[in-house]
Length: 330
Image 1 (tube, rainbow, N blue to C red):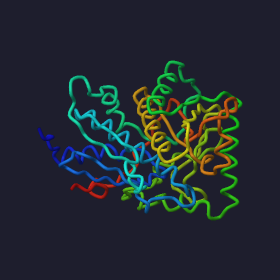
Image 2: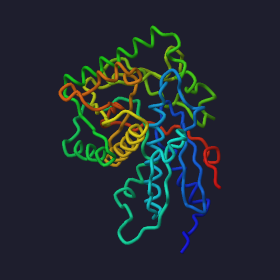
Image 3: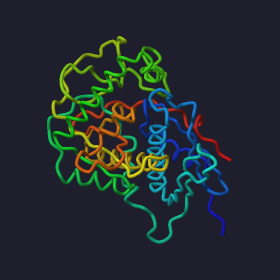
Image 4: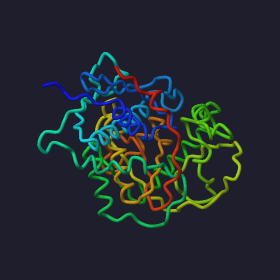
């Protein structure tokens, strides 16, 4: 018996939810192709949206695409489908990152735990605002760690000494950028200032920069740099930021895709718990610094992302490309 075909409206909805995922500088480095007769969605990397200065190995690109893949799985489960996922299905085609077959549920095969995360897809936004000086309950930390583990990753909440080391690495990365006049090339390319911010479909618009940091230790990237942004203001950020490290065992394309899926699962869980989140990869863009970010006790694992988690404003939604620009239906 043949599979029931999905209508184009449903397919477009699935991709729209997928593209709500975070990506480095909101470059949205993905493309989708849906084969209707097979009910298979392919996820491809878009090399034109890669960042040769900040992400020469395309690690962050894979993580962003992995986050989009996880949203696609959540949206499919919400639509009553079973997303059967294969990573890197064709080794000879490295830009083909994943293939997802949308099966009909049989018995209890529908993943309700995925589906329950669906409301958080549109609620999750990166926050570049101060968070409250308030601890995260242990049971909430355990929930977020379990979310990462479900996607074959590990979430570590570093102790005070390790956290201070991470903040030093961020400051080191910022200093390197000041010494290298070409280091901000990718950031400038993907920020949107003035009237461009109102019509942008990608990148980080000025209304999402958040205030400048006058004081505090929170690792928040300043997308404005030395450029003036009207009505932005300055403020004090938290002095004891709550950081978490997302790590994988390996450090290849499949691991990066797993990291992206784990990252988005953690972010959606945090959003449902009314936690605000932001991400920083600044200290991880240089491999030497990235190795120093590891857990000093175990010295194992590959750190893929630093998360800042807390109680505060979620921040505004950033623009997304129209579905028609990223989806092909065959």
